[in-house]
Image 1 (cartoon, rainbow, N blue to C red):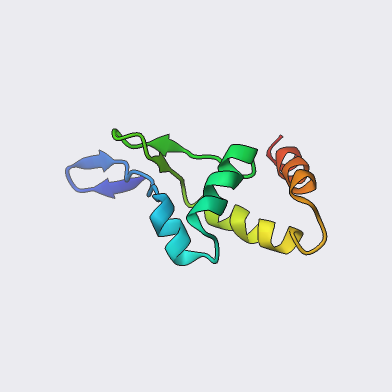
Image 2: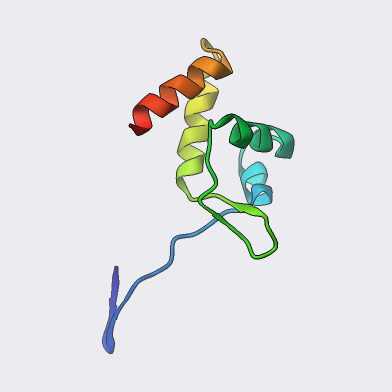
Length: 86
């Protein structure tokens, strides 16, 4: 929460479109879509036009997926991520 002389206001969290994610990561649009469908990552919101939006946590999760892919299957990674979120 940020404060201002005239009162208090909350800065909205940044939401990222898939295009911004693929621009800043080694993943393709299709991979981001597949990871969302598989439950590896989750959209945090939707645009009025029906496009997925992700919060900044998606970058940490994608980084973790890169590391886990060296030794784990996507199914195993999904189980690991679900366990961490519980």
